[in-house]
Length: 487
Image (cartoon, rainbow, N blue to C red; front, side):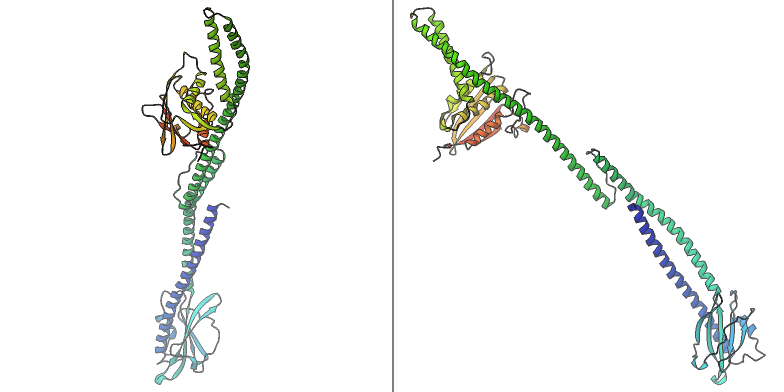
């Protein structure tokens, strides 16, 4: 059963019950009021007739009681009242009725001694009719006991009045119940049924995937609380949906980054193997050139070409040596690192990615602290990652400035370039793994992440700041002595 129908039935039953109780109480009050009027008239008639009969006996032929009763009886009574007389011994002696046939009242004797001045009252049922009876004593001269007088008034008019009141009450109650029923039905429809239908429809839409749905308040506090909770649930589901989409997007990007990193790792391994393979014939070329050079005279014009071959071979061998050192697996070795030499070596490794004509990066060093205790391979990778990031930002042509200083018992190294810089909105993400603002294929998103890990392994910290005048600025601080050198 619908809640609106249930509320309607509850209220309708309550109103019907309250109306029935109110009607019953009202009719009983009206009956008591009408009986009180009949009682007053009966007492008045009884006392008036008792005063008349004080001087006349009911059997006296000079007394026409029927006429007397007709004179004092109310004219509006459809059924006139009736009198009954009792002798001194309490036996009924006669009946008088004004303009009517005397009723067949039950024959009974009364005890005159038990009657007081007020008399005795009772209700009589004669067939389907009801009557009100009052019996009062009749006193003669000298307050002698003459007998008793009974005045019987019909209650037909009272019952008819009550019946009319009951019919009118039932009619107006029926009209009231119908009207209230219609009002209650409309109120429950506007305030309960329609808002609940909206809630049901909204729940179905949410179930169908419309997470942007929001429901307007209905104006009913309890339902508005439910609507607010439903809207809050929709907001939570929408946020969870977006979070799930973002999670899957990041997962896909992470997988792409991992595949690219694996590809680069494979390229690194291949490069390492190629460096070994190139080193052997390069040594042969260099050795043969030196052998030929040793056989030539000092003024031989061919010596210059052989010396060029030997120089270039040595330069290639040095680059291969650096490349092998950079690709070698990390084995922590804490030693004194010459920062200037390591920075220049890192720049020469980065320059291998560019042609000589397109590479014009100026490295400026201002090192108040020229060496530090660190792992050489790790620091080389740190500087290479930072330089590659800066060189790509300036497209191979720009300026890199590195300074070092001793600050509060810690070594501070500041690495800055004059490139376009990093937007403020991205600075908090630059050290996240696989985060990159470069195009696909230009970066893995691991360079700065690995750099931050290397700094952390050395007990330091790194942050990115905005450089006045443009560019990016990385501030790194390290302990005065690293692992293995702590005192």
